[in-house]
Image (cartoon, rainbow, N blue to C red; front, side, top):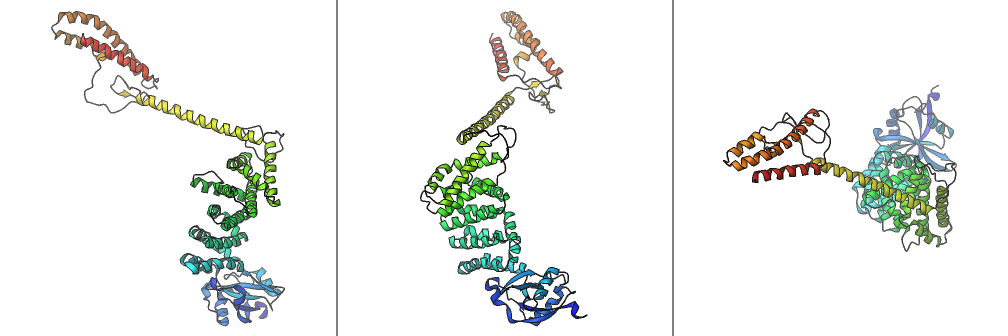
Length: 501
């Protein structure tokens, strides 16, 4: 009955407090595993202190975890970690592995993955020179030996650490970082972490501007691995490309086209990677508008001439990629819909309309220019209206408040300072009193003739004031500036002539 509640299993440990000094299998200690009776119904964490004492391992119970080491044939490999808060009986899959071959399979005491990842990141950021170069060189092997570290690495800022080092490192360090990043991409957890971290893809695209051919070639290979993982990644790559090129004030895909347009480009494998990245990206685009925008950007930078040069190189794989690009583009031109009011999805079963590719590009360019002209005309009209509103004269209502010529609103603040009354608004009685003080009979006689003109002017202005008073709560009509200007000038010269007379 007692033996049913226990499992006799082999135990060992690995001193991995420094992950860079460990090479997995060669450091399993002791060489001859010790047998230990595990309690099936007791949590693993409660049994760890006794296991560490039995092994005389350097680990601390709070920092340790158990990992399965299993054999398949004659080759041993690390398996999953046990949950320290659960018992063996609650972890049925791991228990079955241990029971399947108890004489060979064992449980290994190791440092928890989170602590090891923290140690890795700290050493990468705080080391320099040869020590940092060794750490970067060992990073790929560390991920290869323990895939569980990859998940913890991408979840705890490991990708940010690699990009930070890569942007200021030399070409050798960049190559080591790219090797490690390629190993991360091989695991599902690693690829999912990169998908959620677009800065990694932006950095890979930035490396295409590197003057070192090996760095460019490795970056292209990793971008190709990223795109091939799922079609949705093509859209993420397009976003990353736009972010990088827009920040540098250059057209999209400039860095990739610079690689393909090199005059002395003799590395056929790198050219093949570049064309494959283009074809895979286009394949991941769902709608025709986005597809043609990408094609126009590439061909405006000389892709057509570049493909002619690449076809002359005679490489079969490169030639296949160039022909694939032309084939798909021809199919899209033939399937292009004539209805411009809807989003055109690719691979539709519509009636084929044969359209020349260059003609379609010119038509789209003309449509873009037409939209820009409409936008320019709209802003030009707005600027003219703003100038008219700025110089339009205000109208004074019967209460002495100013009515704005734009929206008819009144200013509530009434200025108490004396206002200068224009000559045409002065009363006839004031003018007559002024004339009597001049003691000139001839001027008084002429005044009688001019007063009738002034009365007609005053009458017309009163009508305007009355109309504006009646329409105080309504929006007044906008009057052209030129008409108001001539009215003001006419009255001004009339008054000057009257005064001079």
